[in-house]
Length: 144
Image (cartoon, rainbow, N blue to C red; front, side, top):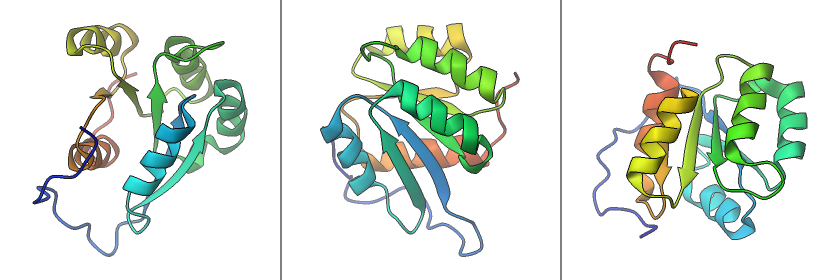
């Protein structure tokens, strides 16, 4: 279920920490809007695009301004695997979380095969997504 737990387990960010800039690449317009609405604008800046090709073009010009990419795995024309490969060619240290409704075992295989930072399984709790994004961005990056 998309939603928030009654008590957030994540501490409030320190005032000195900058907002986390997230690029969302997902062909579902409702999901893109949902993510934008759910991530607190005081803690996150979200740019969401439906076209992987347009997202890659934007990312190639602004790669250093994004802290993380939230990537749908199943998209027409250019799937998550190919999009991820292009993201890594543009920026080898880019942090990426796959977001998909696929079963957990399949998502674990994808993250291992492509050395992706992690996954978010739909449906999800907002607090879990926020915690994972913050841990991925603020913690150590996976070796390239």
